[in-house]
Image (cartoon, rainbow, N blue to C red; front, side, top):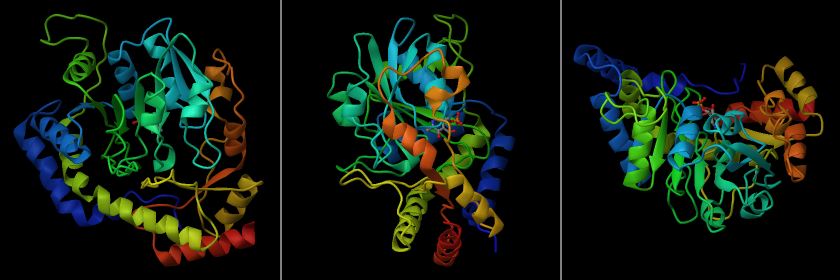
Length: 357
Ligand SMILES: Cc1ncc(COP(=O)(O)O)c(C=O)c1O
């Protein structure tokens, strides 16, 4: 049987009737953008995160841009961001007018650290985008101790816990989520959220997501049309209570891979990651992926070209060496991971990997 890289459908199957009932509620209610479902989801996500404020937005990329703007980031400022991440973490910076400054990641956790961020700090640094990559937890407090606010990019980390038990997405000054369908908490389309530590920041986010307006008649600053719709919010309300169980399963899967000699990145000490992808390293990852494909196992290098080397980012050349980034980009390979993967499937992947490698 083929083993897919991820499986967005199986976890939804038992919830089908509930999801359809939620959509029906929206259709019957006649409210389609920023209505009662979004209000309720924002409250429920805030409660789950243990964070004071959540605002729904259109996607995880705009969530980062809006979070940075809410922090006051603008032209002339610099924002430190890892290069080993999904492109959007950095793409979200230039629309604020600021310059992305690329930093390295830890070779074991594949997340930024206070040291890798510190090496890229300068007098114009206004914020850091700390990515909880692959569901691992970046050391947000240590980075904020450098004296610069952190935007946690928690797009891949719903369900992850820091060493003190607080949730990823509730650790920094502001955090962002993506609800792209393949995420740990995925909607039925695009969606995102901005989590704010204080009411003033939350108010800025809410204004920016609606064209820079509080009252829909006066426009204080140039903002965005970046709103979460009611169908997505209604579906997300059904899914949110299941995220922890799904992430428990993801951790179990990562443990099974480790038993098979295919361990993923190291968890930062004491943390409980919510493995979004299961990434191993190999000197010839694409050859392995091709051989796995022949055996019916999907595998993929997600960030083979690191962000700083993408054509669109060439105007922002790195100022510090990115050795761990270059190594991880060259060698990483994502193996199947989902909330429904079985022990047998992991054995099958490991068997095929053993033959391929
Ligand atoms: C780390 C990271 N940041 C940002 C994003 C952007 O999210 P979206 O696709 O919802 O814009 C994603 C996912 O796509 C991501 O994985």
